[in-house]
Length: 423
Image (tube, helix red, strand yellow):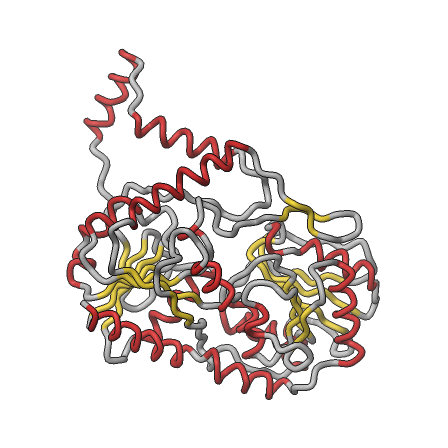
């Protein structure tokens, strides 16, 4: 049984989850190949999509024709309108992608030789219209966000910004935004109208429910298979040793924040910032990983470590923290929470998305009562005064039973067989 995993990238949160599955499938009863648009790593059996070489003569002729008769193709006009839309999007909003691309995945040899196509995060790679028109294979689509069933947004951010009181503000949409959303969704609906061999997988119960209630996937079967990690990489490490490596005193209270960018509205750093400013504990250190240096108007020290991709180093950082705080406003099944739990570090988060799937309030972490600065500050203080019931080793042991990548691989192999037997 040959599986072709398709992903736009081999780096980033969704890609990490995708390739953890891909690597777990190696040396099993299935053959797993991966096709990516942009390749930056050396994963086993992973191949880069070969883009067509530009015909220089054709480009020159087209440019001359444009200058002589002022001709612009519909394709060019369409591309310009998309670029203008993206350029006008509010800074801090999540990634947005259109359902069209110039690539035809079905013409690749890897596609032709595969028994099953497993789509993952395929923004700007998968062309909805041509792919589902030309596809002849069973398709499993692993969701990593909401984009496959929305009008372009990867998360339907209904809230943007924060009030003086520390609560989310309702986001205001323009008529043009709604028009673009509807156009994209209509294109997707038409592309899938006659598609009978599509199965959906959601890593979190929340995303499963969102998919099942969407216009695009409401009549599709949606399975729930959580992410899996390499439990030998993400593991408990000695706290004193870990802190010594980063010159952090053992007596300090360490709060960890991890995100690709602190400027991403959805990641909610502003809530943690204001919560820590309320607490104002000079024995506390905020340790952070990601792009963009955070700042606090308080006596709390900041230890910003920048963008880190090495998983062993990241696991050491989880191990030096007393608690990992994830103030995301919307999220699927964040890899960061799984990583923290496997390292034995408790997690505090808002009760949103897939976070309640992973956190048992009071046992391996804490969930706030509401999405607010006050509620988050209360939970951080409660954690440092009461702690949680499970030890770090118990937190890890519990996580291994649910989020081992071998368990995930077994669940996918079972689904692959089920889907293939239907054809």
